[in-house]
Length: 254
Ligand SMILES: O=C(O)c1ccccc1NCC(=O)[C@H](O)[C@H](O)COP(=O)(O)O
Image (tube, rainbow, N blue to C red; front, top):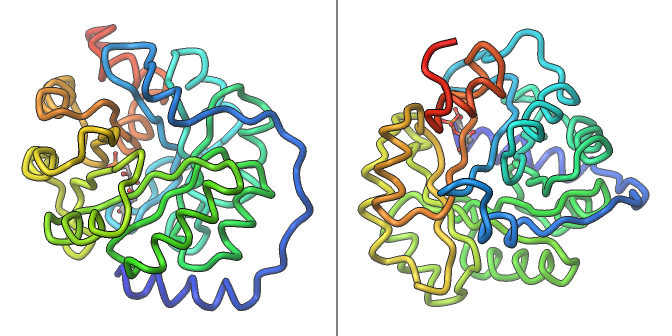
């Protein structure tokens, strides 16, 4: 699946025309996660669909979801901008930037400098770089380009091998451990436990994927995560805002 996604991105990159620079208020993704509103930071994701679960939310309205997330006090919003596999769009991100005052992560499969430039132009505050689809050299170059443009970068890893290797080239300020195996789609929060001991003390650890319950949240915090990235649990609840409050044990049953 990951190979298919990357092939699709190569075609998209070839056909990509850069948009003009959007004038937007910038917010620090890193600072928001380093100073969370609750006991652990939360990046609330909006995704209409995913390769593993299909359609997650039929009536997908990014402006409404963003407003709800802001109202319940999430620290940052992640917007899937991939169209083919997640049914998202760059327009979704632009709408969320226009209507909320939270840092926004562009969640996509970035493999080329033109996508980094595009992310800055559409107003993203941060981008995702997935170590599993990039060489160390490419990762370091895209990381530098993004930070030079004033963007924060969430560097995502899934295996200890890949983490150890990339740390020989860069020490990302924010490291995401993806609990989802992107080959099998299985999620296991023990992945965060396995990798956490190897995360440099200067890097902020984000536990990503498969966090569905308050117990999952408690565990990944115990493993050392300073923030979580959650999509499915919020998309599938009665409303995304209720999903956030439920995860944090702020309501029992609604
Ligand atoms: O979500 C998927 O099925 C997926 C498949 C292939 C590549 C990436 C995928 N997800 C991207 C993500 O990283 C998640 O959307 C994010 O971590 C939130 O995960 P979850 O809370 O499990 O929805």
